[in-house]
Length: 323
Ligand code: GA4
Image 1 (tube, rainbow, N blue to C red):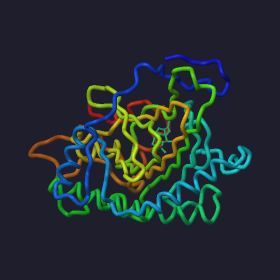
Image 2 (image 1 turned 90 degrees about the vertical axis):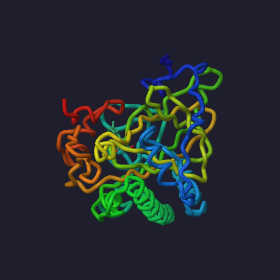
Image 3 (image 1 turned 60 degrees about the vertical axis):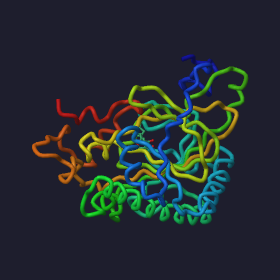
Image 4 (image 1 turned 45 degrees about the horizontal axis):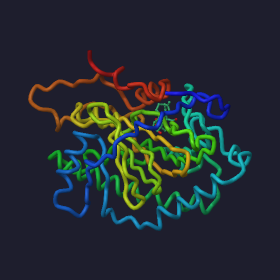
């Protein structure tokens, strides 16, 4: 790793090119119209904690409309964008991620969905309307995916998992990330950390990006592989909470975004969490005879509080594992 003495790149690690992550050829694809969808999904959650969704039925226009609004927002002059900031924890943020010193080559908008939808950052009416249309479509998609998960796990009722994230008071977060081009990087044969490695604290995260590459996930053997972008599909991450709900059967996936600075990447991610008071513990229906929980008891509120005190790359679940 090298650190350049360019002030704006200070404290953002550069990864030397020459050792690029291999392409993730084994990427599991859950085709929602296929009879194998549930089985593919379960295998993917166990092996990678990550999969792509196709044949989801969400019109491309809906994603494009929100992307266009985001492009417009991020092309405003910095002073205008700063009016929607700082992101502590919601609103516009630039390079600083969280409040514990993490930095990345990224600017973003973070919205809390727990209270009134999209009331936190000041965005235009057309932005808000594109956002709300997108969010309802993703909520529905997440419910279908989580019902498929319950089916694959042979759980009853079928909404046993999805109901955790569909309550009115469920703690959802929405994030729009813009990874700008980086002219000073060009010709340097380096890549830049857009968003440092981490796992998501929630149950699942549903991501859609433009066709610019950058997302990488860590495999079980800790090798990084890069996920081929696909603007027409969605990608799902298993989060820490789902790892606990399945008593470690599913894997919360470590991931990061690396940018080469020559193309700009735009992603939109819906983080689906439970209500604040929800107990995060292995689900009864999934526990075998005499099986013990691998985790101490905690609520989502307790986990979230601990997560927000941590650094991005920390293993947050470790604090809650039984020794
Ligand atoms: C990672 C997943 C989501 O992007 C997020 C992030 C949050 C933030 O950007 O404010 C955190 C990070 C995320 C986990 C640890 C803490 C909190 C930054 C950070 C260093 C919105 C979330 O819920 O947790």
